[in-house]
Amino acid sequence: MANQSLRQSEIDSLQYIATMTNELVQMAEAGRFPMISYLLGMAYAEAFDVLRGARPPRHSKFGSDPLHPKVHSRDTHAQPRRA
Image (tube, rainbow, N blue to C red; front, side, top):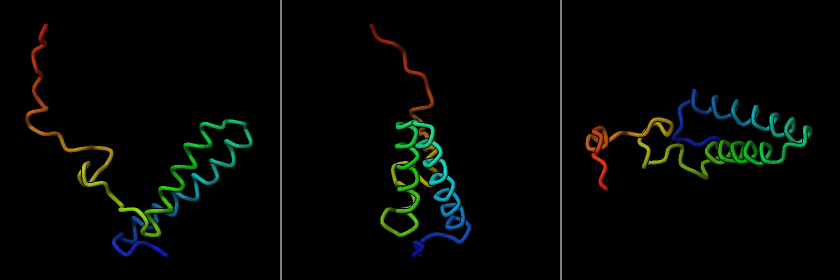
């Protein structure tokens, strides 16, 4: 079932994330927090999709780490405001 392009540590992490988000979905539903339940459900679905190979593990537009996108050199300097 696991995506063959993932390392074992990534598979373990995704399985843990899927398990925990599923439990959090159940807690949010019991607490009547529909938006939180929905968002956690989407996180669960994403983790499960990556595990089964239905989605790529990384998005190319972000580079190798989706939480820390690459900064282009031209983006590091402040631009003057124009009126």
